[in-house]
Amino acid sequence: MDEAGILKVLAEVPDPEIPVVSVLDLGIVRGIEEGVVVITPTYSGCPATVAIEQSIRAALDAAGYRDVVIDTRLFPPWSTDMISEEGKAKLKAYGIAPPDPARDVECPRCGSLDTKEISRFGSTPCKAQWQCNACLEPFDRFKCH
Image (cartoon, rainbow, N blue to C red; front, side, top):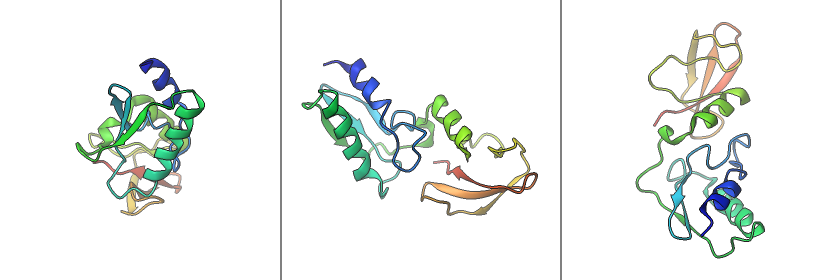
């Protein structure tokens, strides 16, 4: 099994809701086990789970990995700790504050720490709506979990 080749393919599969990050960047791909790609959605009710599975399947098939199986597992649950540092940088560059429970929320547009949550519900269930008090721009923040 060409694990490195499979990982290269998966690194090019974008998340359907945040296309600047791959399924590897977000930590949705848990690993490869003997010809099985193990994935975990960002939460059990994620509406993008089927789209993610289909995108992974199409990418694997196109690269000649038709025998590789996709196994979706809900346990252990996905956590924002699984987002790679590169993924966090891509989120910020895209205008989404990456999750970091250890620090204040930085505005992805101007860098100010003078921010506030305005709604626990953002553009998708895994994000909350925030606003910067310095530049007044609203932005999404990945919820920490």
